[in-house]
Length: 340
Image (tube, rainbow, N blue to C red; front, side):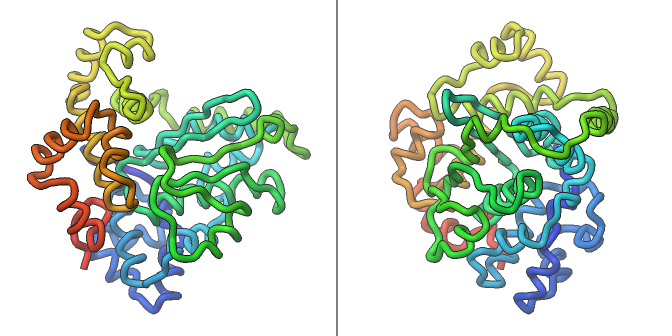
């Protein structure tokens, strides 16, 4: 079943495409995105189709900063009820916790985890169904602009980390993020000073914050993120450490391995299937959007050796990783499909 998201994820696409002299509705047809999704932010559409459209727009426009330009067209209100709830939180940490808990309402593919350190913390982000450089830059730029609307126009994160290769020009990145991003990193996310996370935000209304949190909870309809989604998050977090196993994942979810397998089967999938899907998605993204060595890709996917990765890749994609990168990395879309 395809992962779905609010068409608000395309906010800004219409304007940026037109700035480039393109027909946004014609591009939407090519990417199999409903025409109405470009003007109605509340449609529920395929996340992968939205990703195709953003990457297609970037290719056709020639704008290396296409995703960043989209982010600059957005307001916090584009995030809907979650955006309102974020704006009312008493601290940036509470706002990040809202995203980690309820971001899936905006985009089923979105995984957000706040990892605490002694002096700094990192918001780890992943959207497996939204692959591509421009999509990930759009994601982080939208987040930074949202946090800046809460903390003030001078606010900036400690670090911005991308997994893809650096662009030819950094001008737009410096302007939007306020810091020079790090590229070809092992993780995608934002790093914050803990003192910044916990500093009270002036003029917040605790009663309104509670009301908005209850409203967002109401929107969930009593359902949490599916077990499949939670397992996928844990798999993505565990792969780089070569610590991905059904036993470890079940332990993190406070259940035994048999229960995990039974519940995943009830949702129409299995742990092995989710690992294979996660590896395939990560492999395509890493190969298409960075020049990191194949050994580094193998390590990030949790393979014990480069040869094990090579055998897996050939079985999965019917070609070598080098051949896939040569063909798709230069002219393929976010899913390795030619977009014209």
